Image (tube, rainbow, N blue to C red; front, side, top):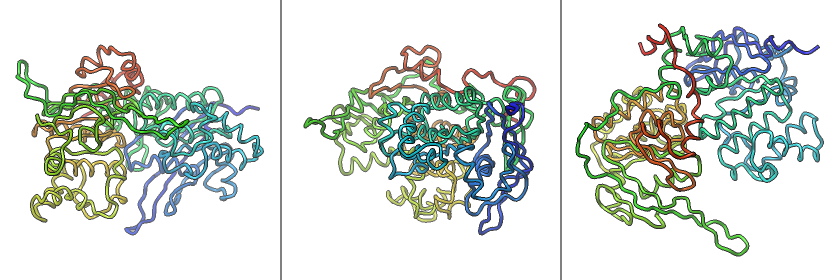
Length: 557
């Protein structure tokens, strides 16, 4: 007899998990109850440290070495996963429970081809011979939405884009047609169009094959679009759970209301401190002008011919003091290369870059150093941009030391002030980047960029790794700093919901060219280019109505 689809395939009761640390045990999950049914998506949402990923990893018993399950049961069908031996768990992992990890850059084996890694699941569980597994792997990659799957199967992870690597992880997770898939932030760093394709593939599995999906995400827009049930976690506990529509429209817990109020994809609010020019005000000369910029990269020779890639193609931009220009588009559209041209971190093939009225296209020596002080960059990946040997205090004060600003005491005072402004306690000054979460590291990177009070800050996906509430804090902070200092932001993002909150003007890039520009209001209300309309349509949660009733009225209290 077929399993009753109304019964929970995964049933978690009273789950408690802790981690042993030098300071004693840290209780990460406390008394969690959670159900996931066949053919349905259950989303677990909450901030970093809320326990959502720990809960998901406890299901597969893949906790860190210092983690342990203290209490509770995890029933999967007829199995209590907390009571199984490691050998028994290996039979279930991959075959009946698939896992899509958050970061494909560290989850894929860098020395194995993509096809081999997918085929390995089939061979380990005796589902295909070595020869059959190779061809089956290509079919699975196609099922996961991988373009040119036969070609990608022969490539290594470093040869694929972030979206393709994520699809490779999905292929590994679904290869054995598991009954349950656990997806831990599977699309958090991807463009909205790629995000939609990947989530479409996961959702198709639930509808066509009855697969259950446990989706861990900090993006409430994704949860609103994809899940039948939402579980809200805070400080290791479930504070609210129920059908998606019920949780979003009539949230009961104050924490849920705060998450909903902070989510850019579910609201239309803009920071109260976001400056708008007064009617009739005379606009000052631009701080940054990019005129017909071109950047070409040489590719490996093919058939004896020299090839080039035109990453930036005749781009023109204008950015004024106290304003935010958002540069949006998919990966590979030329956004980050354009930003590097503005900062003079790469040489333009053609065109002109002006900063505060001065031509800096060929700036060298003291002129280049002056530009470095007045223009700062916040990278997308804070872990790679922060020196792991430095303390947080040394990271933030490094620009001050480099430009000989102040003494040791005044620099530390400045570091404390900046940490406070990015919502981090002064106690992190003595810690190392590896001891912080991804969101905390990004806030440190923003604090470092602001240390010299620059005229221009280039923000390259500065909030893509942050939880919605922290994201809202950072966006408010950027707007507040701009209101008080006239700093200009070149804001690179794939998240148009975030752009709507923080930007004044928007330039849409595709294949190295700007296809549309305009104010935020113009672009969102009347997009002219089909590509812009496609990006807007892909925003998760855009069609979800705001919460209504008394619960919503107190969302920000």
